[in-house]
Amino acid sequence: MKTFVYSLFVFIALHSISISAFSQKEIFIKEFQFELKKISANQYENEYFITITLNKNSIYKFTVLNHIGDFPGKAVVQILDGSQLVATNAMGEKYYEKFMFKCTKTGFYDILIHFDENKTGSSLIKQFLVQ
Image (cartoon, rainbow, N blue to C red; front, side, top):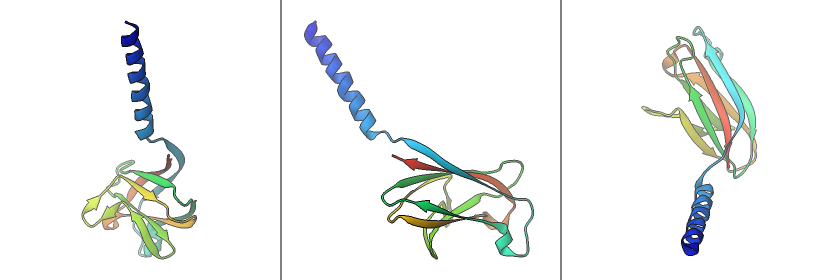
């Protein structure tokens, strides 16, 4: 009986260690809300732009919640390093409501958000640090 209990204890301990080794912890950092009620002739007025700092070797997760209210547009989130696009949630016909970005250098990155197909929209984008 002692051997069985000891074996069970060791199994549970090893199982919990293996689960914690593979589980990821997400830490909420910030959220961006972008609402566009009418389309402007000036394209820059149809976009949301913010600069954030990201750290090298960190993995960030972005989630996009669309259609807040009755707006049809889906937010396209682009992460730019200078003029270079380093991550986005829309590629061709594929659209992702969640995407990850592994930062390769510490620095300032621009977040550019607009709605697909030049539609109006209201979206909430959340940024998390994945550990």
